[in-house]
Length: 519
Image (cartoon, rainbow, N blue to C red; front, side):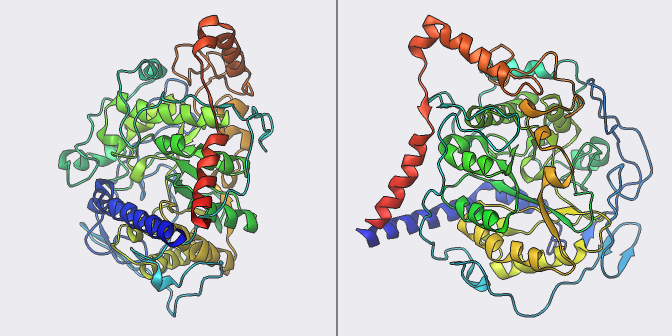
């Protein structure tokens, strides 16, 4: 029975990875690449940065206007990111060619238990046993965040949109969340065809004016793109909530005393709420990464963007009791319209570091899971990132994922270890931590800053649940939601039909999986 179970789980893992390989979201990502290797560790052939860029005040008033004021800059951000490449740079009127060095020598051996050699990390590799649950947190447990509400009782079953699909925009929840855009100047930009430069040449030609990151790496001062302090790495993981793979990351971070920022996909939280709780209760930062991660945000309508952000924000609050004030768009696909909607809903965009020529600090670990590169090639990219990061006057943010065992092995066995062992030493911190944000500012319930995130939410409050009534106010510690829930529970009709599923039930699923392998 043991071998049969292992065989089935292995087959499922391989099927999942292959499906991931065929997922159109990764074909989309490849369309963004320039010819050749599109990483910062290679020769880049990108159009030179435009002379005029849009700008937006770093502290806009509640009536957010993402303007198209013209300014002259060598980068696409009105706060230039001073990235200096380590070798020669040549420019022309049409092309900027940047060559950077890569580390040579044999790849290192993994120092983390159970991680295979680097060259063995490739599509179809054998999987390791699932990890048992290391910590459980009962409803009512107190989080390690001062002023935060206790853990809620659980999720209401059957009340969530389908997994990995854009939610219905005609629901009462989305209609309620659309009201949050009232009073904000949302740019009248048509959705892109498919979020790619090649798929929408007209939008790509206007990329600088519309602040489109995908085509040209255009950012705004409201975007978080790097850590301010030199030699500081803002550790981020795009978390697809695939239990129990994530626990390898959590165990590693715990033993190394490192906090990270996890960008979570909302529909996966419904499947694995215990994973999200473990991340949060371990002191890591939680951020929104849309509900479905199925299409680039610039290709969606305003209502679809609101649905993607609103449902993710809601499920995080229902599981943790707090509402994130940050987000990251899938594939980094953002423009001024998406930015304005995100900030109107109280979420600041977090991107990752890039060079003036458009080279991204992307480990390409997702390409290993897709079968287009192997572990050694991905790690060489990361070595280049570390080498070039030392030339920055700021810190940096790198794109990494925990979407499969492949990417987790790369992180705990190689990339994180390389950063920790680097000379000069890098400081590994969660992104909010590296920004010197008070921890409480990362969640609406514990936020004491009336101008963060770019709107005053202390008076009117927010209807996070989407039921038509305000349930969250900035810095309320969860009291507004608690009072709303109490009023609902006191209603005879609500009491008769309300049903909660404790989060412990999801933990039981994981325990049963472990037991099936042991048996």
